[in-house]
Length: 94
Image 1 (tube, rainbow, N blue to C red):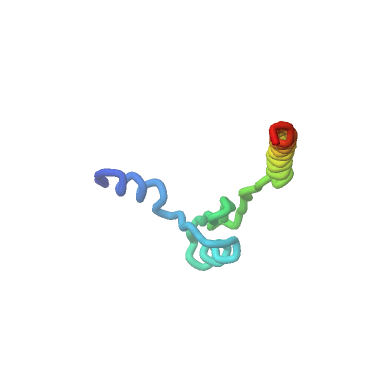
Image 2: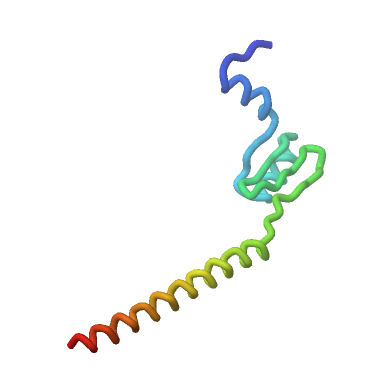
């Protein structure tokens, strides 16, 4: 067997694996066509019937965004304080 280039390497590795849009399609393809499948979310369905999940921890994501919100709120408050000081200076000048 002779393969050349990246295409040959990719087909050697992924020859019996199909990328599917969701878990339902992956399950159907694995059962009917006898191919291993992986979904866009990372769930894997084996032609032998096994499934492994592409688990995503949403709590971690929420904590990350809460931290970003907290930092942005702090920055906004600092800018509002600075703006208030500038307004006072402007009133003194006028």
